[in-house]
Length: 564
Image (cartoon, rainbow, N blue to C red; front, top):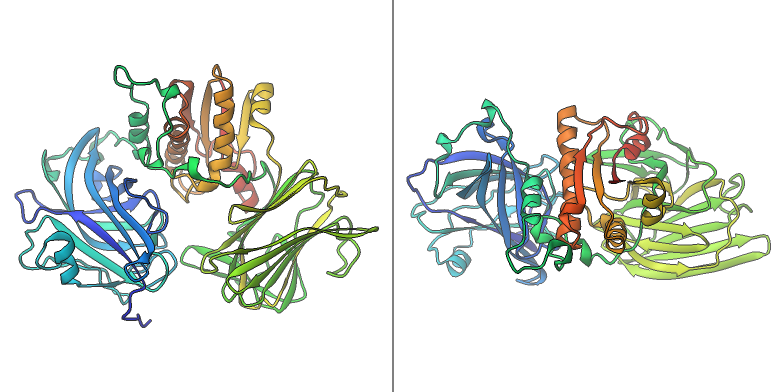
């Protein structure tokens, strides 16, 4: 792959380095626990990573913070992200460190590319290094071209700051949770790494989420406001995204009726949970992505779901590779499907790509005629997957694109929906579906917790194999926070549950950290008193569905709130 000499996007990492001090360097590989992006990261955000190797430090936390984040518009349209790793948390002890980067691998295991597969290359910009850091020469760079990324310590490497610049084609550079960074690190003060008690000798390191939780739950200084009255803090306090700033109000349905992420589909077989007519589809996978790709010009895909409830949600994630004129339509039928011109289509959700925008139209049909409920055009970034949401609740219909509410109408009377059909046109080798989910609408938190004492939600979502919350979780967490604020006597136990993918010990630890992450956000961002919340992780020990299908696994991944 040939990389252009013009860098249209770059990310800059600053790592504290103190030259060839007395402390002995140690190679440490860490795994990011949250996303880093020139577009979404903010100055002051905490950066958390878990040590993978060496074995003596495995499970420890490496911490730092973002010192600068700018996306596009400046530096010739380039994006800039700067952060430091400065502290190792080992068995309850904080050890200041300095680090020098050796290599970077994205969450899909690919070296020298970001999450979207954009090739990175080094930039030995000595002038910029001197201007930004006062260093007479750049001390290292990431080597692109598909070969192993490496940092070389140049002569005269006695400066305090190392400037590492990574450039690529594209509007952003992003590293997701699970991305790995190999560091050459040393202790700046305190004990040398070689003298530390090995984690392999027994005991366990303190999880990152527990440390953040302990900080957010610490007693306030004398004269300060109590936690329950404290102003919400930014997401940087807990290492989580700031959910208070998320404007989306889409609440994904609670009871999963149909879910498919194509994780149990093989490349040469038809999708097991769909009926295919009119053409062909194929599984395309790679770099951690699985996608049902349309191969025919026109095709009908019928998910194995029948008899939808009166109140339900529909979510899809679609990828358009060449969005010139691609049409994707959901037909929600009150009888047997009879083709796109058939009579049994009380509701259609029509989308069509138009340049850099997506046109959306929602139409109601009946024997008395048709009515367009709403239409709009919204700009989207087609280099990223597009998320479409439909929410029908008590006669109110809302449509969302990437979390943005674009159509909101009421007094919509629909007959029972017996079948759903997904129909595409002109999407041959250009359109792929990555996720589809139907679910019964979410009940009100306050009503359920008051009547049953337990509230189960699948709307609190995390990055894969991580305790970092997705911004999509904001509407549900806001609803729970409002319920706690309106009932100051309510106390809850937060339970984390996983599916059975992975080992028991790993799932148990993950579920504990996820429950603690939810508590941390409720305390630090929504001002809920920490003494009102306890946490428990149950791993995969309490399944509510099978772990043999994508839909069953989606049901088992959940957070439960129990009235105490």
